[in-house]
Length: 219
Ligand SMILES: Cc1cc2nc3c(=O)[nH]c(=O)nc-3n(C[C@H](O)[C@H](O)[C@H](O)COP(=O)(O)O)c2cc1C
Image (cartoon, rainbow, N blue to C red):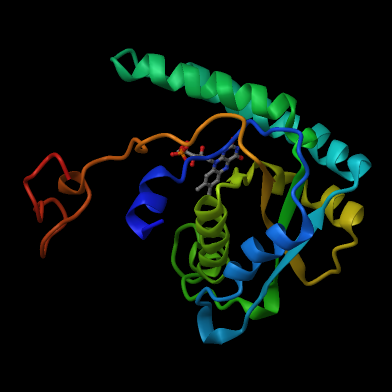
């Protein structure tokens, strides 16, 4: 597959076939993660592969509370335009996923060693995001590789709220944090032909924010 096809079709997969994902396949996917860039090449990312049905069920149980809170908030804010139907069907799909989160064939907990991230924006009077820059490129590499071989994956972060419980469940030492939970499995449904994304004309600016770099709305 060419990179464009992978990136344009790498949808969040929220329904999996029950078939197992063998170690070799999983390691091929996770191997892509270690080639990602990280600040200072400190390589803070670790993957905990959860296959144990009890542990997966616990993760699924804990996912529900933050999901329900998020769902309630989103239901109150969906727009009334033509996007509304799409938004509601996406939410319904994500709601069903939440109910079955712990049944995914495998759940990868993405962890990171705090001493290995170097956030450069903690002194600004706003939310710090730079630390994640040493973590999420590895996650993206994993998602890209999964898509290439046809494995479904759902990047989720809601469960990070439950980090204390998850820490105990997977034996995560102090000094390490959870950054994402990725249920994975062979997809029940085909990948979409193309994801829904804003055109570049709305998100790319030339010299000044607000001066579109391109006017072609199709791109
Ligand atoms: C940082 C991040 C956190 C996310 N967390 C969740 C999550 O907790 N639960 C979930 O169902 N989807 C989660 N998603 C998936 C997004 O909802 C999804 O990427 C978005 O709706 C676009 O859909 P698509 O990936 O199928 O194109 C997350 C995605 C990102 C990038």
